[in-house]
Image (cartoon, rainbow, N blue to C red; front, side, top):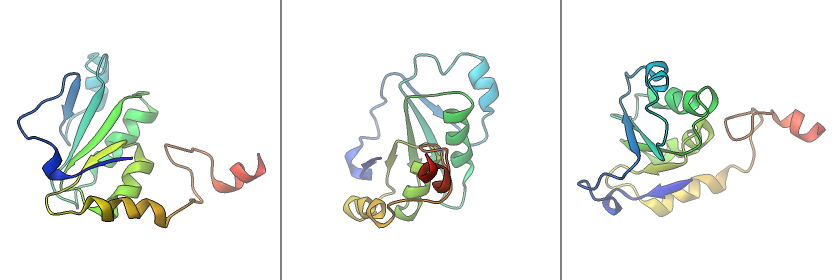
Length: 131
């Protein structure tokens, strides 16, 4: 997962081929309208760390709508959320102001494997070991 410090991203720069999706947006309508075609990055907003709707949106984008580009978490992104974000389909995250990027990277070193499947590896541990 690409972890970006809050002060490393200029607020005024909007990347080409980027689609920002609000938490209350209907992904089925967005996909049906063709808005995802040609998009390199989708930005999903966490207005506060207790609002987890973007997790569901990332999972749907990856599994149902087969979006293969960058899914970026923005807003109130804390380091204890990063592993779950990655397992839900996020490929990059802009940390909240004041959050140390080096401490965020250590979160991934704490967990080497998971029992249940996720977006990255849909098979549970027992199925992976049996294969």
